[in-house]
Image 1 (cartoon, helix red, strand yellow):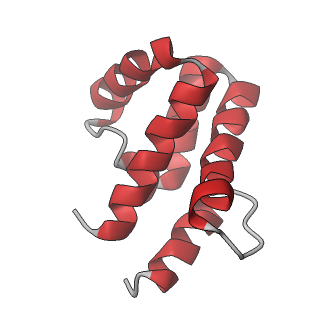
Image 2 (tube, helix red, strand yellow):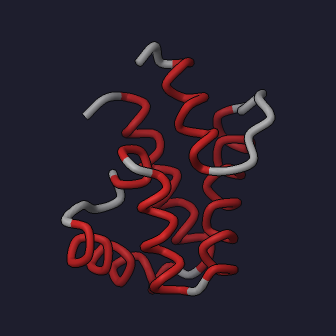
Length: 99
């Protein structure tokens, strides 16, 4: 696992715990049972991660989680770019970490 992937996973955990800590295990179970991946899916395939989250929680809750993930980077990491979705965030991080 690379550093960019690690920070995305931390951001996902932060976001889900900020939204509702009781949903963390539910989301992880859902991801693993439907995609075979855990939170790392947010980095490896952000589109699939968002689809899976939306199937579980609904489209608007999925978008809220996505915004909380981006917010984590703005608040804690000092995100400087104009990032509007998870896909753009992953591309941005890959550039920063040289991947």
